[in-house]
Length: 164
Image 1 (tube, one colour):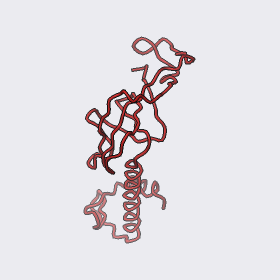
Image 2: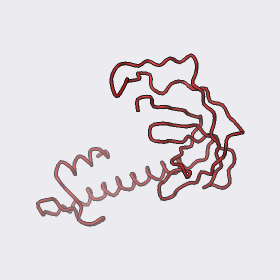
Image 3: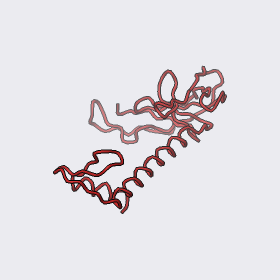
Image 4: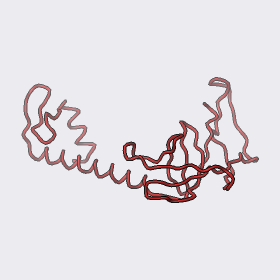
């Protein structure tokens, strides 16, 4: 069985587990002692845990750029200095709206709805901008500064949500 089929099997028959590695009990009080099914469940759990660890390892990698995610907006930062594998110094990059980009707005929402949301940005480094320390939070599984969540990236990214 594939992962999704195994999940569907449990949900369709309203089966839940009484103990982590113990017997499976249905909602009607019957026990299913099928070891093959229990082994598949353990394999799925192991795969889910491995996927989680892989995602954390990928998110923790230090890259050249780091983007600040503030709700729906994204602000580009560059990694200036690596202090340790859990602490880096980042500096905000300047981002100017591309003069060739034209906003397409239609009536709707609060005042208007922007179809080509986000815009095109010209992003440049600016050594005069202030620096901040970004630290890896083991509890939250992400990079963050005192201002919020950061995501390491290969390219700087700027996004401004005109529809908010």
